[in-house]
Image (cartoon, rainbow, N blue to C red; front, top):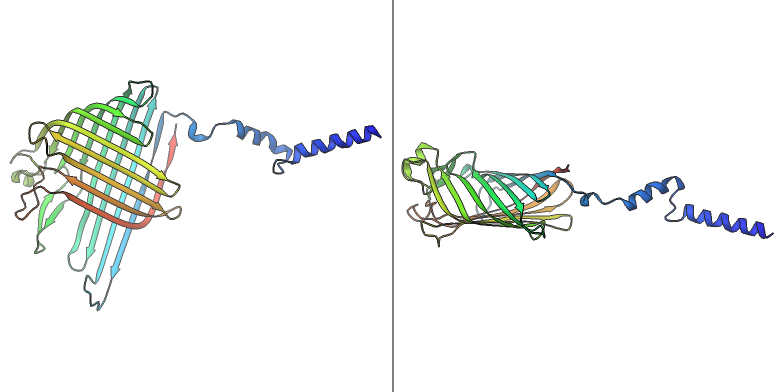
Length: 318
């Protein structure tokens, strides 16, 4: 009788072990145990990491016999592409980012116009100099221009040719320190920076625009430079990416600091749809295209909001 009771208890214990823990079958136990002892994928070290995103937005409006006035039809299309490639190994890092923005607007009153066109490549190489893995001696290269012809418009609707590919183009070479307190924030600072402004187009070169002397194609400046880059995800559906570049020319009005600032906010609706908001601000003391006589610098502000297609490029680590 005692043997029978003991055998019954033993079978009960085996049954509990095999079929408890959310009723996991015995044949699956080795797999579940393996999952508990392996590290999550995001903790695995990598040498290269790449990825990016493609956003395409559209806004359309139409009206007929509308007392408040306005355009009978308007459509705006904007596209944004970002691609990054990061390298890290021992005490070295190499960050590469390329951004491309293109916008187009069509209305019945003003016709077709380009409202955005930017190509921006940033590459930064650093060697760690402290034990906290936060401070690096770094070199930075930045190239910025546009692809297509650009125009400014006067009050009468006349357009004036003002820019095109490599006119202007900006090249920055800088050596300094890069502070990375977190994976989301990078603060680069340099006292040794060369900035070249390129004006390749002969028509624009003859006008002496963007600080380049009349008839010349390149204008070099030496000064101090800072670049702050920040990315952050608010939960699973909201992503922010921001950048601020500051440059001061030692030889000419160093107190007039040139500013290049971008903000990009994405709200995911589902896997492929999202709402985006972009705010860009530029101030360059040498860009004198504004004011009553079109010969003064000014703060350039661009704001865009849209809803459309959002396709992330798969992040690869290897």
